[in-house]
Image: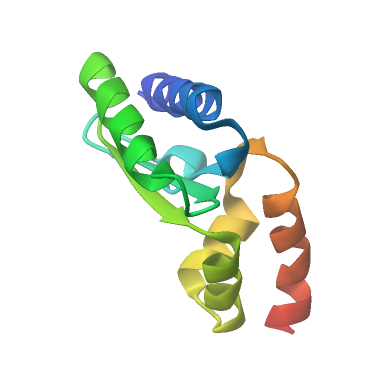
Amino acid sequence: MKSIHEKTAREFAAEAVEALGEHIYSIVLYGSVVRGEASDESDIDVLVIGDGQSGAEDRVLDISYEIDLRNRTATSIFYSTPEDFERRLKLGSPFIEDVLSAGKVLHDNGTFKRLREQMPAIGG
């Protein structure tokens, strides 16, 4: 069960980075797949941090949809810019804190690492 979910997430990360390059900063798997609780019916939760320009978000969703059709999976994409992600972190979003603490990094240009390092200081 877990293998198709992780395989799909890794395919998505590879194809998104190949298609969008520098417009994609970080791709992080989170949720039931990372916790080892995924079932056949589970969706695949993926955070994408990108530049928010150049139609990147729409292209990310298209890539995810194409891979889901191929693999017969369901992926939920949460797309954010670094600024919006950081704002949510400063507001104390439990969702953002969970992704930062437990997420599995599939791609990172250093953005997610930097945000992860900020978490203890902000969470105080």
